[in-house]
Image 1 (cartoon, rainbow, N blue to C red):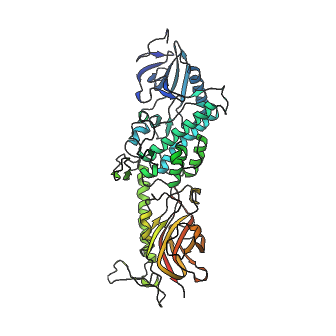
Image 2 (image 1 turned 135 degrees about the vertical axis):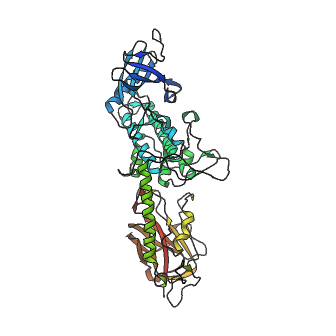
Image 3 (image 1 turned 45 degrees about the vertical axis):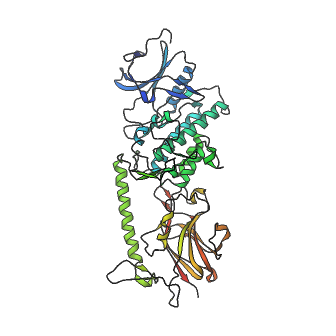
Amino acid sequence: MSGAPAVAPGLLVAERYRLDAPIPDRSATAVPGRSASKVGQLWHAHDELLARSVAVLVVPDDDPLVDHVLAGARAVAGLGHPALANVYDAGRAPGLAYVVTEYFGGESLDHQLRGGPLEPTAAVDLVAEVAAALAATHAIGVYGLTPAPSRILFTASGLPRLASVALADESRGADDPHRIASARADTVALAQLLYAALTARWPGEAQISALPAAPYVEGHLRTPRQVRGGVPRDLDVLVTRALGDDEIRRGLPEIATPAALFAALTPMRSGPDAGHPFGADTAIIPVVDGRGRPPLLTRQTAPLVARRRRNRIGIAAGVAVLGVAVAGLFWRGPTIYPNFITHSGGSTPTPTQTSESATGRPITAKSVVEFDPYGDHTDPHIREAPLAIDGNPATAWHTQTFGSPTLGNLKPGVGLLVDLGASRSVAAVQLVLLGDGTTLSILTSDGDQPPTSEKAMTAVGQADNAQSHVTVHVAEQHSARYWLVWLTKLPKANGGFHGGIAEISFEPGK
């Protein structure tokens, strides 16, 4: 920087911005295709004209990218996207160029995630905002704003801002290989950002984030759902499609642009009253150790945003009240569930071991399992299956949460497979479902071994947009050993679409 003043604390840039100290966490920004190089140095500075703190990027005037930096700053300033740091000024001074943006005094997302991951809906909302911003910049020929947890800062109200260096090159067309590569790199970075927000683990290069590294098993990255319980399956699949790892993508269509990722995230976003800004989840989460040890449990200690805490407490209380109400509606002794008997003193009903008889008692199921030929069998709700035949409608098997009622278009259905122990004639299947609006089919198989696919089974009944209590009458009082309750459309619930089954009861045929 020949003839330029030394860039040091106290330097007055453009006779207005007095440099205070370098900002170490974001002191430079990587350039796509130039990984060993950096663009400029970021400083905390004081705007002496308006008496406010600002951030000033200082770039040597002999840097070959200086014109692209100034053009990118002008383009971002004109764009005015709420997820991008505001650009206040840009220009040249003796021996250097500068870009002035808003200054954030709080911590970065990287620092926040050290206390624990975000809730899935909060993670989706945050990354969707950043993806929309990147899609908008790419549309006007601006690149280089590659996101990372340390570059996501927050306004005083908790809204996310991507603070990075924008580069513009109007000479390159939309089909230029460099622009295509930049879009792909930004999409991978967004997927890594979403992975980190969901798991508080970093799947990228170690020097980019201070978060613990994401786990690998046999050389392959574990997906968010394999690291943290409760991540919706369709969200997990979306992350793998955008990460750029062909091994974990397993032939699914690739998501290669921020615009495509934003479009895929949009149906999963929360409603306007979700209570963001983005608080951390305090749930215990499993951490997968890549060396094959059993999962460890860690308690996240980051504080919740007060509003989200109130929402969760209210929801939990509502669920508890609902459970009591449902139990009260259905506990009427033998007239409703005749295969259960009531002991004196109002004790919990106990299942008898009787099968169908002349009294018309419902058939006792031998066992029940979750049936999901299209899943990865890491669903934490698998162990809930027996709750659907325990005689207690206050307990239930739950599906995962999906981004659409048709299970995120990831699979044709999911359900519970009941083994009656032997072929039984059934006149009707009585169900207690979670929520209103479930579409389901009743399928059967009478082989000696349980079926491995619903395609090999016989459909004997169905219910469309069923209410929570439904009786499905079986055609011609069908006889079979294995009975599948197959859910193909789920009701809308908080944060997406999910359902479940609280009770299954079989009415014997003649």
